[in-house]
Image (cartoon, rainbow over all chains, first blue to last red; front, side):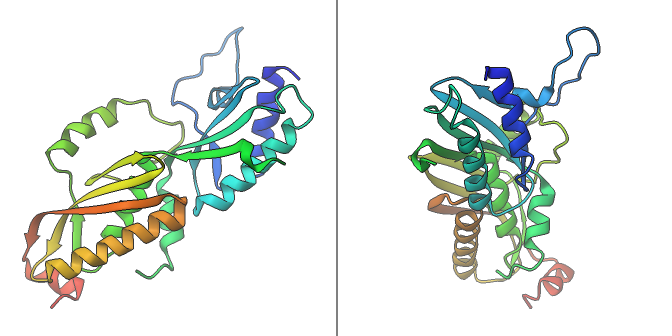
Length: 107
Length: 131
C-alpha cells in the first residue's frame, strides 16, 4: 500500500462515519491532464504520522472521532503505516451542525 | 486497535462557534460582538483559506486560546436591559463550559466575559422575557 492508496482507502473509510468530512480547501479544480482528487489534500500519510483534517457536520464530536480513529487504525493495521500515530484535526464546523444539535437542548 | 495511537485536536474556531452558540442562547444575552481585537482578527479570518462546501458556524465575539489541551474562552456580550449582570455572567459561563466540553471533549479552564453594551430597548426586553 503506497501513500496514494492509503489516502484513498482512508477517505473511503471516513465516508462511513457520519458527522465528519474531509476539510478540503476551497480552490478551483482545473480540468486537464493532471486531475487529482481534492479530498486527498485533507490527508497526510507517512510511516510516523497519519494526519487527517476534518470538518464537523454533526455534534457531539468525541464519539465520532473515536469511530473515525478506529476505522483508520483498523485499515492501516496490515499496512506499512501500522505503527504511525493517527491524528484527527477538526479544523472547522458547519453552521448546520450546531443548529441541528441545539434544537432540543435546554440551557 | 491500540487506542494510544489515535489522538485528536479540536481547533479553536470550532470551540469558538460552540461557545458563541451556547452564550447567545442564554436568556438575557442579546448578541455577541467582537471587541477591537476581534475586529482585527476577523480580517485575517476572512483572508484565510475557506473550506470547500462549508458554511462556517458563526463565532464573532468569542476568542479561544488552547493551551495544554484546555481552553480559555473570552466572550464579548451585549446584554438585554436590566438583567442582573453577575447572575447572567455565571449562567453564560456554565452554559459555555458545558456545551464545549459535551460537544468537543475539550476541558474549559476559564470563561471570561466582557459586557460590551446593555441594550434597553423595550421590545427586546419583552421578547427576552427579562421584564
